[in-house]
Length: 112
Length: 396
Image (tube, rainbow over all chains, first blue to last red; front, side, top):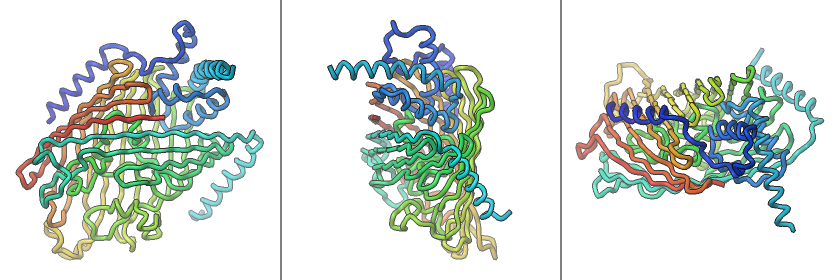
């Protein structure tokens, strides 16, 4: 049993050290829109928000109001061991603002 | 200062802080979320691959075949300071209220939680929803129905979730941009059982048949503290400690205490998790004939300890594919009642390897295999088992 556990640990340990894994989810923001600044904000969002839940939750939420995200990110920041500092929260909100704009554009398109 | 006066002062301070902050705009915001997992549990090493029967002394009773866990949650931000949360689950127990509470937040560092909720204990319980962990089953220390020999072992150290009625004061504070301190302290009804029971009575503890009220009028109290340190922009380390103490019988004669320590290291998306729990529980030994091992003359109470620990590694290999490995142990030391295959020193060791594949962002398939080794043989002379899980979990 000990050998089995040790083997599993080594295998995953090697995998963990074999290089940086790709982001969990592909952002709905196109590559063209992903400026270096926005990419940095996305990295904070992906790193921090995937700690406790799937990124699918925020990415598929269809929120079109920045105020909703401001309150929600503040709530997530207060979660135990969230690791989301105020500075992280600002970066996350900058990325989510792009999603809000996309959602607004979609809604405007639908209402035409 | 008496406890009651201390509590009154604390609540008054929170009320003043809330009134002072009431000039903030009132914002009603609702969040509706949910998840559903269907799991197929297969135990090929059992006779006829059927582990869902309870032949006396067979010892491997578990919930095999299909089990479902679904949850619906509504959170309403009544104001900038008050949030109400209700979460209803449907699973092996039928419909259960996993949470129904409000948070009354004076500051990030001071929040009053009141209602029905799982008190802050350990790190796994925060992720207990099947959508938030990538193996089908829980760690042994927190396991319920899908653990093998669950009837003999009477589940893990602290079966999760463990909703209860009560109040909790919690909060979080950041020291600069890199260190986060969380704390929680609570009083809840606590677990229930008769004083000569071989274990806590998990069913009565959560069942509406007991009116969801305390059986002894004395709350169980506990607390938790955790420190999270950012080691780099893409890595952090959390270390936490938890404790809980209460009496479980109607006469407050016998008690339990649960202690826990947990550590999580996250490097980019690779997560290393370790957690240890121990429950020490006293029981009445007046009816000496019920026990397998000799009770010292004149001793009215004895106790047992149950230890559970796991080490888990979660590694994404592609954006959609994760592999997970977990090693688990569960120990029980102490006297046992007659008729159980457990002995004075019993243990379970389990190794799990699994994978999770995200078909779409909100739909994930999980597969895992578990190798079990028991210290005690069952009536077939078996002390090892192999199990498989296949699950689909969806979220919204």
